[in-house]
Length: 65
Image (cartoon, rainbow, N blue to C red; front, side, top):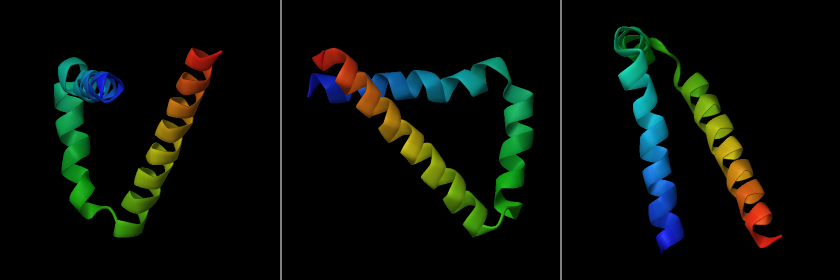
């Protein structure tokens, strides 16, 4: 459970970086999301999930060594 809470907290830190560092640019980018085709958003989501799973796998393998 502590690993889950740690991962959740780290995700929140990374999610907050664009809002904090580039608020105007993030709002501009976010306004374009409704115009994007669903297929494009699904591909972006899939790629991000695969990258996240890869990072979790790498992190787990480093802690077990």
